[in-house]
Length: 416
Image (tube, rainbow, N blue to C red):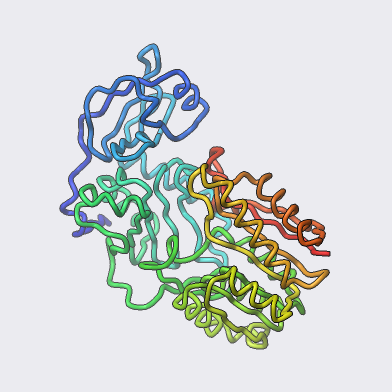
């Protein structure tokens, strides 16, 4: 069946004329190693100025084909590499091949009790700047470059043929949202195909039912990357009182309840997110452990409320710290580490001795070793010891294809 989105009718087709690019030696070496980005300052010569989404052909020092990718004149990442090695046409067949490869990697999730997961993880699945998340029969496409706009019709057609999805929703990064001229009237939350989404989307994760706001919610509506860490929390939560900080819509909280936690507190700044957390508990009341768990919410600044709880001598058996990215640029890494330091000290201030600390970071600019070292040094500052249970990284639907693609790290430790 051929899918056509009326909303994409004003978007032009990709230009037939390709941009020829010559690059410096360092960039050539990086691309040969499989790096998916070509930065603007690495370009030595360029045949002509192009529009966002034009295909750019990159040549090596001897004028031989090196790679082909999507051109973005507004980004310091000037070309996002789609293919390197031997010349290959970038057409519908190519998109079909890439999406099929991504789908095959996630075969273990298909047919399981999980209908919410990442289908395409950008650069790490060979589609740089494009995220596709599945929520039941809804698919969310999130763009980190406007270069994908002129290719959306092709991607949607292939995705529809592959999935038969009921609804396709467009989400845009903050930076992409500012590039209005390259969006051709499209906006964050645009439903590219399907009926309007009046209520939150419902999906399953390991047999639990969740609702997610796919149009306005953080990321694409849910933090799908923490699925395996939520499972780990469930296994550790029996008979534990749990504080989930930066709870968002209560993912960790619900797993803890199903794991046998008699009391769970979800703390977050967002009132709508906490309302959805309550709703997620309501959706799972048929589970005896969830029904038996006392779930409470706290709305406000995490740092302030953690200090307030400590002042009240309130303690928990498990404290989960899963903050948003504290560093989006490398020069913000030191400030981010200082924030993690303070957060861990506050978290330990409400964690009883012998309790379990779960601390995560989604900041790609903070290296894993730096993160784990800072957690341990923060604990030492408040005279607490940490006996590590486990260090974890990415789930199978969030593969790592290059160094910068590794962002998620999580520590499970018992606090003395």
